[in-house]
Image 1 (cartoon, rainbow, N blue to C red):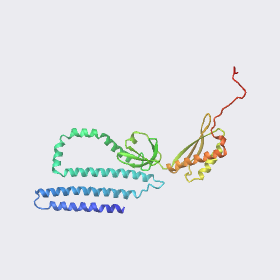
Image 2: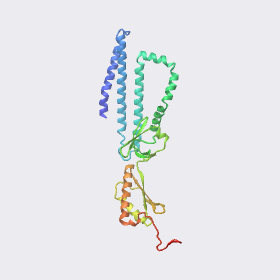
Image 3: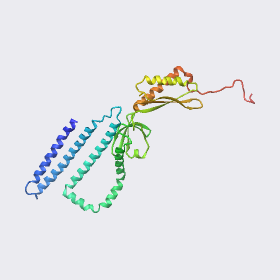
Length: 311
């Protein structure tokens, strides 16, 4: 917080200095002087620039003040991620508006540019239509960013599955979204993608998640022994949150049975580690105690019998 206050001192001091200087120049005699008009115009330009700089710092300070109350590194961070998402988008929108108005005031402060603008205003209708059509995609993208900020189909650090990849929402901007993939790659998508295409949000209502494990075995596997081993392994690991512990036979196929295991964890990365851990331990358990229960292909051979008409 202190660094933002320190950063504000310089632009605020310069802004006040040039405001005072402009008031001083305007109070001088001989108001029709070309040199004086030039100095006033240049001074006015500096006032706009330094005021914009000051406003940028104020926005950063306000953002830091609000977000320091919401820590997204905690386990139960649903509200914090919601606030971070809204504040980040709002910050970018305000900065965009500050830049837009600053440029507009700078252009209007020059007499010649203002006269040219007024002269072209009458013929700006057609040009506006052309520019509007050309910028339609960009405008739609920005509006999509605002819609995401306030409707929040996802938030900062939400775990999502998109484009056959899973990761976390790292940045939410007005025009694009950055997804941090589990292997540290970055997937950059336009904001309109998330309004036009389906995606999975694994942490929308809470961070905890249920992981699914499939194991295929022979019909001879003792299911109750497998359930007991699953429970034993879950109680021996800190990855499990203590909520979901289910083992079910979900399919009986020609050569094997499909066993589905459901386990829960406090967040998606932990759920992934838990799934890998349980899968490994159960395979080891079957190999050590019931090796005959791995899937096998049965071939029946009738000895001594020959097909009719054989030699």
